[in-house]
Image (tube, rainbow, N blue to C red; front, top):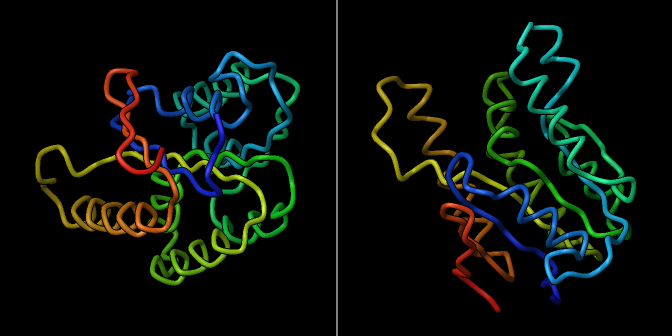
Amino acid sequence: MSLPRTTLVLGGARSGKSTYAERLVDGTLDGGAPRPAVLIATADLADSARYGDIEMVARIAAHRRRRGVHWQTIEEPIALATVLRRHADARPILVDCLTLWLSNLLLRDHDVGAAGEALMAALADMRTDVVLVANEVGLGIVPDNALARHFRDEAGRLNMRLAQQAGRVVFLVAGLPMTVKGA
């Protein structure tokens, strides 16, 4: 399957987004042999372990086991645009996941707007294919606190901006991909 320069893969929790995106990036979605790829993981194993988040440590370990040796993994919880620019000419890139990246920014009091602008600019300059994974968080109930509502609103705005810029947008439901934009 030919990739547009930028693909956005959206879905709910445990919808199959990451597995689909991995297979799209490494070429195995169409039954091909795995090709070298880069994963920019926005989870921070050191932070998760330091704060005793055993469940997140287990999730990170499971994601690592799922990929083969043809993957180069870079863990970057904040400076996503910088890392993308460093790999602008590299192998195809998977960013997993923007929702966690947004959480990292909010919880560390970073300027979400500036970080979003930097991400959009980096994506516009990429010379390799990039697949971005994000949760669609706007399909549930209205959160009961200000931080959660702020997060939901920022995630929705980020997803809309990325969808406008992306050549393809795929929405996963129960492991089934639906192309929303592009071929």
